[in-house]
Length: 281
Image (cartoon, rainbow, N blue to C red; front, side):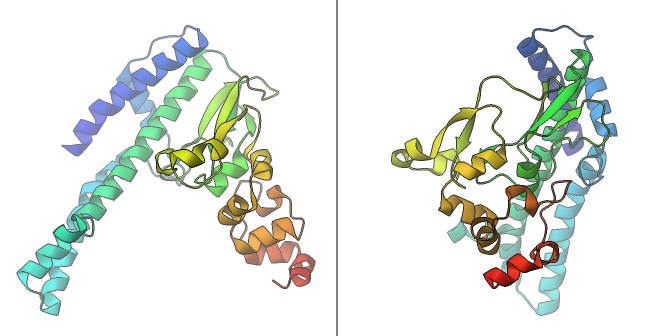
């Protein structure tokens, strides 16, 4: 039932995204049916290699296994029926957020959001190609919740047919997208930023003016990071990498490999052992 319901929703989403992009760029292309767009997206694996159908098929199975394991463990440890039920459902005091079913609900929501993001991005790519764009630019979100890999890849430009290009979502809750551009990668307009790791709604109104604003659309996460305060930088990098950044004169790019993966501290030490010795790390 879940898969059938999701399929209907996904087909509608794919159609919407294609029409939306066509309207934005004022172009015309061959109208594809939602089922075609959805099937095309399902053939492309997400980051990590999993296919849409594989992810969907695991949702119900994982939830069922968790309940079975809780019952089996409860029986083996001598728990009462009420204790087993409470472990599965959670406690009223915590609004049932501590139960296994709530954990399964969170996992389901994360998986569905990730798959919908995958379908949207594949629909975008289809539209860009139909509209004859030849290049795409990776655009992350300028805030403290952006992942390290998305921050490292921000503003990178590829040929639209380059098989090595990174297509979001790159991880669960990924908010990055690919946007069409010319070969020089330049964009028009501005992009929003939040100099904080909190969501907009969680930032008190009296703090928003100094933490939220607009920057040139072509400013990369790396350039944005240089403008942020010490607290933001330390929270995002972590204390040791922050020390390397501020005192060891490590450039932002030095923390990442060419694929955008964050180097471990051990790998960074191998790359620049002298800096680690000077800073006593």
